[in-house]
Image (cartoon, rainbow, N blue to C red):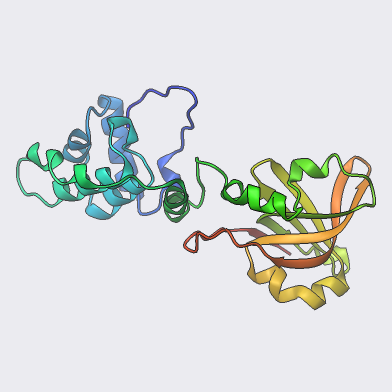
Length: 241
């Protein structure tokens, strides 16, 4: 956690991280403005954060730049934060070396738990090979399909809209690793599939591709839940009426 970024990098504010309150954020930013953090021990010593925010930062990879993977960083910050008085460097040198790194699926779970987003691979990319085998298209694939052809696509629901002026239609925006896709759900389809559409945060949609005025939509006819095999990932859609 230094002030420098090397490409490819993404800078996220501490406001995106759960369990980091305003006071903690101000402390971190004040200390960072004074001088870059040189180690996990330096960060813990200067910020004096409680164990919960320290653990959260470790689990989302905030200390990766110090050369420790997430489980190692968690071990170290919890050990340091529990010590009273002067922090002992030996806390950083034992125990963590036996821990295995998180695999990519576990990292994504930790990211969504800690920030409701991930800077790693998109969750749908983890099952792209399986989706392709089943003939399920990505949002990028939809751009090359014939108008009025039958297609099947899938993604994480990021927006649901049911405007009062839409006469009972629902409009869904889904996201995968290649971009966004638009799904139109007619009133009769919404009535028949309401539970699936409302209670699942990732969907498989089969329907008719329609291009009109430069916009590509899938007119949904069949809907089912998309399983990503990371049960702890909880996606949050923005639902509007």
